[in-house]
Amino acid sequence: MKKTRAVPRVVVTDKLRSYGAAHREVIPSVEHRSHKGLNNRAENSHQPTRQREGAMKSFRSVGGAQRFLSAFSGISPHFRPRRHQMTAPEHRAEMTIHFATWDQVTGAVGRPTTG
Image (cartoon, rainbow, N blue to C red; front, side, top):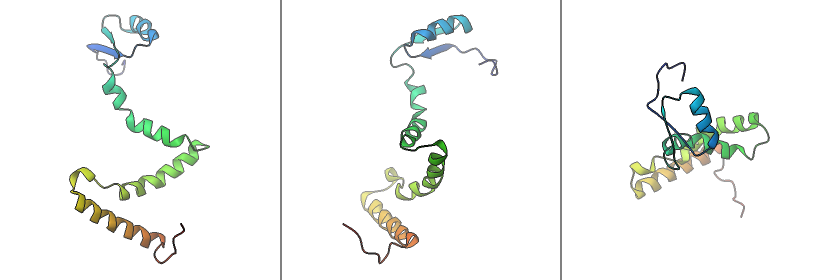
């Protein structure tokens, strides 16, 4: 906050008690609101980070997670088209094309399936 040189109108936090003490010490002139639902906007902005953290739980190291996620980030959108922008028949046709392309790239065409 010192770098921006702007004083906020209101500080919104969750109900953690230590925030009040820190607020009184750092910027006592600003109103402090502490309520259950007021900081939902800030919490929701962290959702992509939370999803990545959840995915990383099963990895043994940060480097292993980074290697997987860097490869996965290029593959994942291939199987998750913008569903809200197309009808169900368009989505099925799109996914058929995507899976056929994937089978060609990975060499899965002509390979017997297990099951």
